[in-house]
Image (cartoon, rainbow, N blue to C red):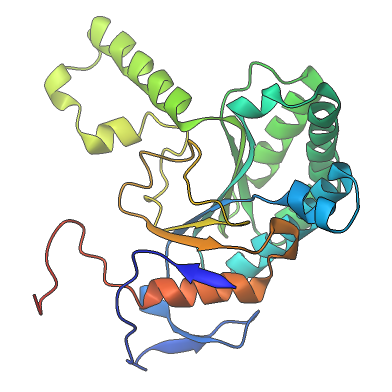
Length: 265
């Protein structure tokens, strides 16, 4: 069951609509979100509900991710950013952390060729100082192989925390100011955004979180300043392209004011 938060009234306009390949839903292409962010939550709860191991839940979640990347691309989403592993996830049991890292490595090894063939451009966001040389090489290879692709831009957040990202950006800019490369009066929102891991991407339009929790969990805080929030009880392994399309349909019906007023107000 889907729940909507902070939504506006649905619009009935049928102009410039197109059917989404994965869902059969007709949406206004002009109202499509350019950047969709997803907190992929609920692998463990999904597994527990089925009497399976958490590892099985994470494996099912990886299969869902593959389907959602393809569906988002077909729907016309420009940027998809997913929360795969946070800076706080290192606190989990070492056995689970080790499994997740192996799963990431396996996912890249198995899927990067297909993603490249589908014109996906991949980038990792987050810190890289705790990963093994093997995994770093895998990440860099995936980014290099897909760097010139012109399809959907797929950001995978690994060892990522938004507060950490913002602090790293502040320090980087402070170093440039101290070195005389940048004057403080040159620093505005656009300049600061260019110092973040998501440099070059548009702000988040639609922020989706699965599995029922109603929080942002330190994910893309700067980028999501005016994002529409969408929460679902569905655990991530059960999240389907059709449900993604319903979230986008809901987004298309919202009134985005960016601090202003509706014309009717």
